[in-house]
Structures are given as structure tokens and as C-alpha cells.
Length: 312
View 1: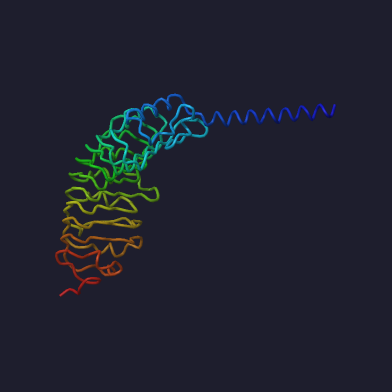
View 2: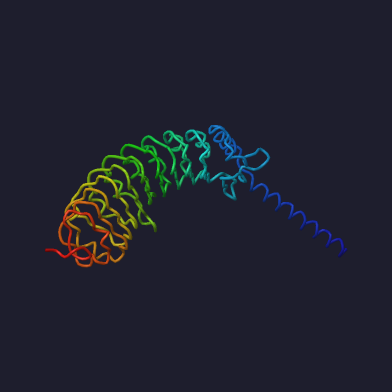
């Protein structure tokens, strides 16, 4: 009798192991609609060698560049990067990945064309990175439909036009990088008044564009840790600029900013990097500005005082 009980327990253990293995295997299977969307995505790009691992005999959760949610098996991340042989435009098929949280298309220099409306259908997207590509056209206003987005990186592309105010409608958005494009026009005030900068590491990077006008007054209420607006054509009186304690880095060099450096700048204990070189600033630097080096202030109209030459 005892031997029979032992045998039954062993059978249960083996059965449990079999069920666990089956569950583990099932967990790795991706959803059929996600597989179909990925296959269509690959085909639209001409089936490049980059996707050689995307074979019918493997779960798409095991495909290179693809990550699935362990519990649901749905594709939640597609990260395609570092391939100069991928050509074409961003495939509309990406819209079939309805559970996507992360989309990264990085360092694909032959990827061209505009950002398609299909991207706006990815309602669960929290991170969108399209960078170091030949993608052109405007920053689409329909990106404002991505209400779960926390990070938007469209840097190092060939985007043109103005920054759409619709981005300010994304309550969760905390970090934006659209540097190194050909953007023009003014900075939308709403972009500063509504962004969610309460998250640690919030930043705004819009350097090396053709942006004009001033920094909106709403900027004073924003708690970015890092701001880079350098190498644009921004023109405003810096004397009235107000910053929030907590900002770590402010880069405003190579613009046409005038006025004087506000005394508040020297008093911000959080500010570790500050650069207003190559502008049209004038006047005596506030006490405490000497904690920044001379390169932070060089090539202005008539700034003086430590760390620059003494005022006459």
C-alpha cells in the first residue's frame, strides 16, 4: 500500500512538471496577430537579413529585436537598431502590434519618409525612439494621441516644421529629445505648462534646429533637470528668465539672446552646468557666477566680471 502511495505521488510530481513545462512553453508563444504584424513589417522593408531570426519554426517572442510580456505572450517591445542596410519607410504594419509599449528605430540611416499615422494607433506606447535615421517631414501632431507616452526621442533626423502643440496634451510625457533636425518656428507655451516633469530625469533637448522667438513665461514653472536649446535662433531678454530649483543643466549657447545673466542663476544650488556662450548678453555677471568656467560666458557682447575679465 505504501509503495502504491509513493508511486502515485511520483506520478503527480511528473504530471505537475509536465504541466509546468507546458505552461512555460505556452508563455513563450506570441499572439498570432502579433506574428502576422511582424511578418508584414519585415516584408514591407524587403525582408532584410537583419531579420534572419524571424523564422516560422520559432516563436516570435524569441525573434531578435522582439520582446513579449511573460504572462500574456503579447509583443510589447520592438527595437530595431544599428543597420545601414535596412531601407524603405516605417511600415504601416507596425500598427498591428496593439500591445506595444516600446518602439525603437535607431541608427538606421537608410530609413526614410515621414512618420506614418499608423504610429498613432499604438495607444499603449510609453517610449518612442526614432533617431539617427533619414526620416523627414513634420513632427506629426497625431503623436498627441499617444496618451501613455513618457519619452519621445526624434533626434538626429531630417524633420522640419514647427513643434506641434499637441505634444502638450500628453499628460505622462516627461522627456523630449528632437535635437539635430531642421525644426523652425517658436516654442509652444503649452509644452512647458503641461509636461509631466515630476518624474526623475525629465529633460528637454531641442538643440541644433532653427527655432526662433523666446522662451515662454511658462518655462518658469517647469522642473526639468536638463534643458538644451543651444544652436538655434532664439532671441529674448534673459534678464527676466526664471528657473526652478532642481534644474541640473541649462545649455543656451549659440543663439541671439540679449540682456543680462539673472542673479538667480548663481544662487541655484542644483545647477551644475550652465552655458550661455555665443550670444549677445551684456553687463556684470552676478556674484557666484565664477563657479562656472569662462567658457560658459565667452563670446558675448559685453559680459564682464569673474570668471571673465573685471568690469571697467
